Image (cartoon, rainbow, N blue to C red; front, side, top):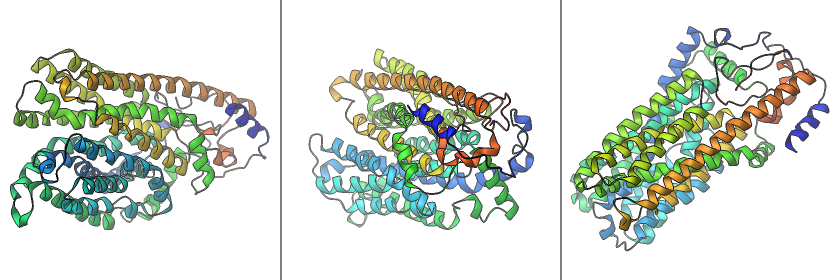
Length: 512
C-alpha cells in the first residue's frame, strides 16, 4: 500500500522544478566525488578537533554518572540508606524508564533549540544533588530525574553529528564518541576508588563524595562546552565563511532535496514508518546484551572463581579491548562504506562470547568468552546508529526516529537489570541465554533490513527510469523524505559510496 501511494504521488506530481546548482555529472565512483579533496579533508580535521572531543567527554561523564550507583553500592550505599531485597535493582532499573521516555521529546526540542543548550548541564546538577539522598524513595526519585535529564544526550549527539558529517563519514565519528562509554567502564572503578578515600570528610560517606564530585565535574565541563561547542556548520566560528558555505553544500548534496524545516508531518512520518520499528527491534537486542555486560561483568568474573578485588581489576581489559575494537570497526566501516554486514558480523562475535560463558565454568575459558563478548557487542552500537541515521531522510524525521529507536531500545536496560540471577552463578543460564537470544534477533532483523533496502532501491530505480526522474527534480519530492524516489537506502556499499543519485534517467550505480 505504501509503495502504491508513493507511485500515486509521483503521477500527480507537478512539472519538474529546475535547480540551477545541481551538478550535471553522476558521482558513481569515489574518484569523481567533488567533496573528497584535500581541501575537504582539511575542513573535516578542523571539525573533528572542535566537535568530537567535547561530545566524547560529555558521553563519558554521562555513562559514569548513570553507572556510578554500582560503585556507590560497594561503598555502603545499600546499608546507609536502608535498601533491602531487590530495592537496589529497582533503583538501578528505574533510570531506564524516564531515560527512554525522554528520548523523543528531547530530540524534537533539539531541532527547535540550540544543541549546546539542550544537550548539557541538567543531569550534572541532578547528579550533584544525589549526594543528599538518604532513603529508598529519595534514590528512586533521584534516579528517575537522572534518566529524564540524560535521555536527550545520546540520540541528541548522534543527531548532532549528522548535521556536520556526510553519511559515509559518520560511523567512525560515532564510534569514537561511543568509545567514551567503554573508557568510562574501564576506569570508572579506578576513579571511584580514588574518590572513596574522602570517606568521612565533611561528614559525607564515600558514595556521597562520588555523586558530588562526578556531578560537579559534569557541570563544569558542560559550562565550558556551552561556550566552545558550535551548534551548526553554518554558524561555526572556527570555520571561515567559505568553509562554512562549503560544508553546508556538501551536506546538502548528501541528502539532496530533503526538507530540513520543522513540520509535524515529519513527526508522523517517523511514527508511521515500519522500518523505524524494525530498527528498534534490532537495536533493543543490542542494548539488552550491552547493559547486561556493563552491569554484571564484575559479577560474572567473580562467579568464575576470582576474588572481588581481582574481578574489579579484571573488568578493565575487556572494556579496553572493546574500546579499541569499536574505534577500529567504525574506521573500517567508513573506509569500505559498509554498515549492515559489519553489524551482523560483530553481533555473531558477541553471540560466540556469550555461548562460551554459558558453556563453561573454567576461569580461563570464561574470561576469554567475556573478552570476545566485549569485542563483539560494543562495536555494534555505533554501527547500528550510523546505519539508522543513514537511512532516514529529513532532519526532523531522522531526529525523531533516532530518539524513538534509542528510547525504546534503552528500555532493554530494565530487562538487563534482572536477568543475571545470583543463584545461577557461575553459569548464569538465564542471563547468557537471554543475551544470545536477543543478539540472534538483532542479526535476523539486520539481515531482513538489508534485503528490504535492496528491494526498495530497485523499485526506486525502476520508478526513476520509467518517470524520467533525476536530481534536477529533487525539490519536487523534498517533503517525501526517504520515500522520495531520489533517496537510496544504505545497505552494503561499494566504491560508489553514498553520493550516487540519478542525474539523468540513464543507468547508473545507486547506493546499496
